[in-house]
Length: 193
Image (cartoon, rainbow, N blue to C red; front, side, top):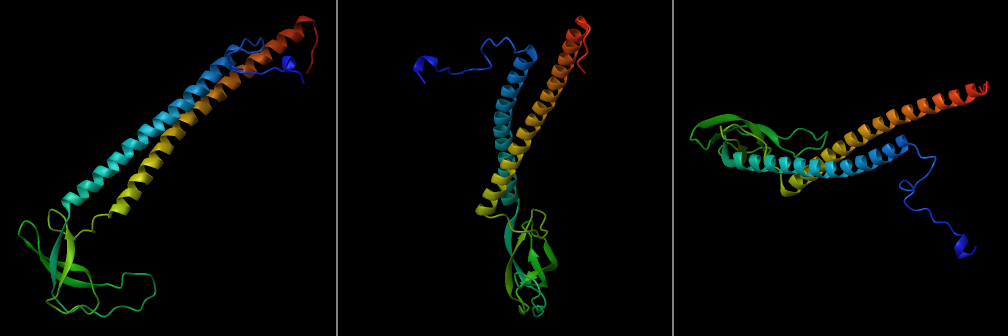
């Protein structure tokens, strides 16, 4: 093929095509704007969600602290292993909260821990037992997953709205085509369908 016969189609939506209708141009702009908004909205929503998760992790680390608890009664022997566990048992412990009050409750202790031995426990500001704060790896995972899911959801909402807009534009296009076919058929008295 000679170079002069070669036709390159560029910017096909922007060129003056006589068959392009106004609804086609509107649809092209809606799709373009939808993808841009989905990408930008997803990024901003992901960053906002990861920031919120980061703040929650920092707040948990600031509110919880580790204290030493004393085992009050001898801890029981471990139960037969039927499922994966940390091999700890429930035992009664006593500890002093950061505000100076003494608390007594059941906590997870090593099996057969003798009375009077000390174990570390995590407490909140009021002195109640709580779970240990998340590790750096867990915090990173929570932040990444929260940001990723929020970004995907925000982008999906925008793309869903674009899909509904395209559906509406397709219905309008089909209605206009029906009206034009009806006008062409009845002008000469023909009926094609």
